[in-house]
Length: 420
Image (cartoon, rainbow, N blue to C red; front, side, top):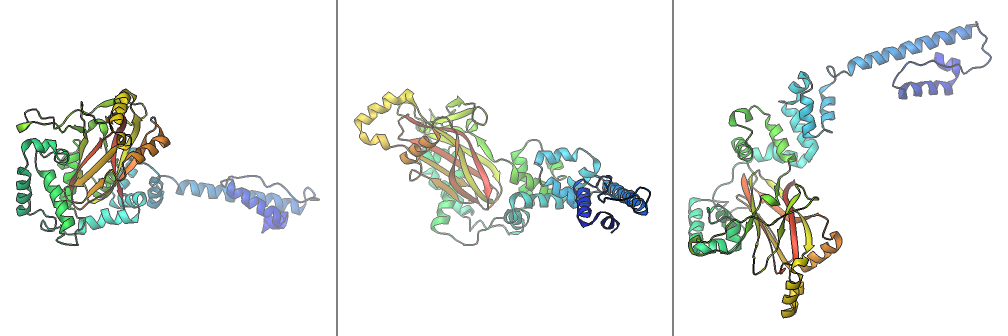
């Protein structure tokens, strides 16, 4: 009121705005009225008002500086600030002082809040509550009873040993080494054709969750993993890249002989150097009659229940090295010009499968993407979604055929992203 009386309403607003946007720093009020005689009562009032106002601003600044220190800052403000940090930045923040370490490291509320802010309320509900509260699915509903397993294993034994490698699907599922992948495949087939129940839910126990971490990492032991907040482990699982590099994937060669005497069940893939890919190395997929590499196969270990989108980071190339061979084959059969086909398949131990065949990955798909990206740019191709009901390994395979070595696919990595 004193300022208004001395300077008028317009100057009063100016003073207040400067005080707010000036971060409450003390400043000198400049006289705005004319004809104020020195030594008069009005001049003394102006001087006293200026002193009082500067003291008020100084006190406000001191109060704010004390209340906004790290030791006195409310927990919710610290939590909110951490929502803008990456996981590694949060870990580095914990090392700055004891208070932050005690506040964040073992606080389930903090990590549950981070889960909700990063993945949204639907996935938060699924991974914090639902999968741990849902009862386990029965072996009967999943076609996993002992009788079912014996039936599927017996069916696999009916194949000749060389066909276990010679058939693409059986090779991809590593049926030469064990029958786990084949049992999972037959279970999915029967669930689709003759479902025993419509109430299969995603379920997981705490023990299975801990076991999944121990299967994926060698740095944690069973003793120290129980000292980590459960929600922190869930948060890290949700944000970590679920990626398998092409250079770490096995190639598939369908050539085999009786009793696997000349078996090439797992071969080294054809690797190349590329500075634009993730690690500088990638895998080239092609097929021909002389050196037949039918594709690649791999396995993701210990995946939690959920719905995952499968993405392949690939690049297309027309290999001039085999252009003459391709032209010779085209002369023999003109249909070869439009005959490239690709096939991707994935399945989970306890879940459903994902299939992307030549209806999509065909000549038109290759040529359109080649025109769009050329032979130098990598791009992500979505193969589909896979659903996992219980803790599972995920098998996958990717091949190309009828390309006659000319149209090639280069693979950088395969990634599974959690979706709603």
